[in-house]
Length: 243
Image (tube, rainbow, N blue to C red; front, side, top):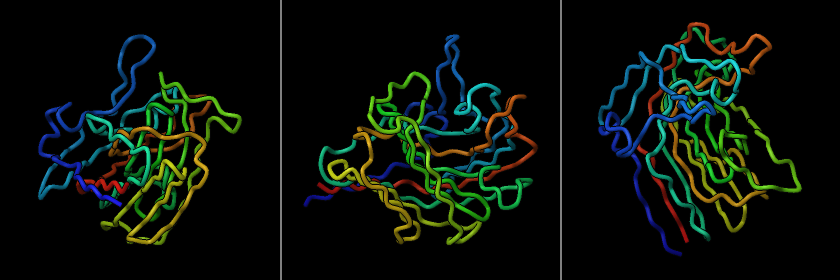
């Protein structure tokens, strides 16, 4: 079995959008683009790590996916998933938030998102002050054609945990085996979740680093913003393929 290890970081290029990283978002039906960018976010790159502090202001009253992410970077190029063998993504994340609801992870958190816009897959870690969640879903992203299936087409399954070091760096890893249709989540070297029989074959991942909320839209629109501030810190991502 051969192994190949690469690193996705180069955060010193973060202002040269499209070189290694770019602001995330989606095109809208009216021809405009919805950007995941908080206008007053403070971005710091130091010792190879990325830090973003954002007072949350961005919201969307009609589309849940557009409301969720507040400030997010996408990798400029997708990471292609090998036909056979395993690919893994590993990094350190620290999350701190202020004026978020105690015990409510989804009121403001820091994320690692692996997004396959050929299938609608979102494979994530969400990290808050006192909890983290592993996330496994196939979502109706704007302008993404999700493969037809005889099983549930759209879903998102969150699994919340508290066994980690709150407000400190923890190591998060996601591995995917395309042949065996298996996803495995690790925290600090320990397996915390395994999903078998992934219903679609995943082809490529945009790696996303974000500050987010996950609050359901109401009849009055978004309720996701109420004065919270979230600070996220990310190490470079180690990408390992074994075939």
